[in-house]
Length: 214
Image 1: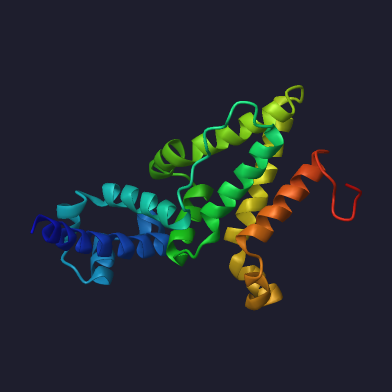
Image 2: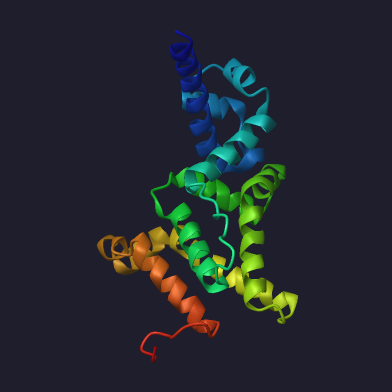
C-alpha cells in the first residue's frame, strides 16, 4: 500500500520535472513561467508548490534531473596501487564516454548546455556534486603523467581530453546531418573509446599514432 502511494506521488512530480525541463530548456529560467510548465504537464499550479515549493527549487531539481538524464552517473574506480597513469587515463576516457553515450532527452541536453554556457546556482550545485570530482580526478591523472609540466599546460591537456569526449554528445545531431545517421551509429562506445584513448596518448607521446610503428 505504501509503495503504491509512493509511486502515485512520484508520477505527477516526474511529469512536472519533465515538463519544466522542456520549458526551461526552451525559454530559460527568466522566460519560463509556472503557468507554462503546469499547462504543459496538464496540472494545477498548486502542484508546483506541493512538490517543489517554488520556481527556484523546481529549477534546481530540473538541472539535476537534466544532468542525470544526459549522463550515466558513472564514477572513477578506486585505483589499485601501482596502476599506471596511462591505464588510468584510458579508464577515465571510457568512463566519461559511457556517461554520455546513451540516448538522451533533447531538453536535458539543451538545458545542460544553457547552464554550462551561463551557470546559475543550480549548475554550481551540479558541478560541485557530480562534475568537479571527475575533473579533479582527470587533472590528478595528467599531473601523475607529467608532474614537471606547468599547471596551465596540464589544465589544457585535461580540457582537450574532455573536449574530445563531449564532442560525441553535443554534436551528435550535426554529425548525423554531415555524414548520415547510419554511419554515425557505427561509432559505438568501444570504437570511440579506443580512438580517443589512442589519439590522446599518441599526442602525449605515450603511444603510437594511427599508421605509426608500435
